[in-house]
Length: 465
Ligand SMILES: Cc1ncc(COP(=O)(O)O)c(C=O)c1O
Image (tube, rainbow, N blue to C red; front, side, top):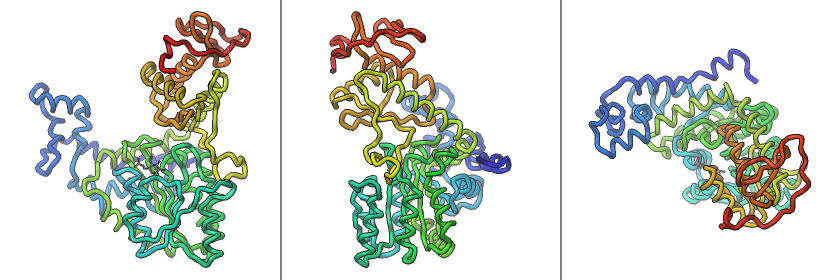
């Protein structure tokens, strides 16, 4: 995916290196952030609370909680040294013209992006299913907002339908806001969307905010990159050099890459006639909206996350794809569990959407059962599932999920959801059937037990059912 020279360059971490050096320098801080002093406090000479802070955050993290001011650490709002270089490397890795780092999450990044794009009294078309950050930010702007309905017919994206209708009515939008990677794993078919968007706005021009919150890591895997927002927008702009268009793509790096929480990228792409203005508008919006106390550890983590993704992203995404395929395969064999795809992808190959293969939706038959499984997974196995939608639990197999963790999940699902047999419960991953208790296989690879009846799961083990 990268040339050797690119690999060497894009895995540099200029900002993280600078922070590392500064954090180790033991500088006495006469500005702010007293918590940083705990990094250097001698053991036993601090209060119980200070000790707890040291235990919780670690001396190195505390030492990295620096304020700005060192030339080496650059200026956040007028970057020209390590931060500027780090951002340039990230832009190159993703394929953007420019990239900004935001330390207030994609909630903040979306606010900044809308502030940059609105240009006066813009008429804005918004994908109805956007994250709350978009709706709240639009509330605060003096823009005329229309909502594109989430289309029942998924062959065409609702935003495209709304644009088509507006064009027929001689109505023009200045800004389009679209979410292309939702928490549930539905991804917009970017090439198809951009093709239609170009057709409808080739003569008028358009500014677009693309919220790609969940899938920043996709840019680092050759197959997944084919649908990644930045790569697709870049390709569309190159294919249509006369298209006057500007794009901002926001990504929660922390959701899918090795960034600290609230680390977000804002990528800029535009036709040559719009790029200078877009750069200026984003710079101004950042200045107006972003906190004046950006977290330096988060900035460093955005630098590291890109380098890590360039070096290992492909391998780790591949591993995640293998693990999620295994989870689906096992779940198909577990009694009482069904594997689902997110609803909008029901249109198959002709859908405006794709399903993210790194997300696995398991249906447990009823909301009560799903809730009980979720609770048991957490209480008994230390497995956390954040999303329940009715009878369905959503398992995100991100690049941090290890094979051992997936083993734990598989074992837990088999134990919790299996058919009851005398003395316990049994289920199968196709190779083993293991009764629990006591956890000893009833079937091992090469053996075939007759099908077991699915019965009510035992009261004493699963009293919450
Ligand atoms: C689609 C979408 N956009 C934006 C956000 C906000 O991101 P963050 O949590 O980084 O502020 C989320 C959060 O879940 C999201 O799902």
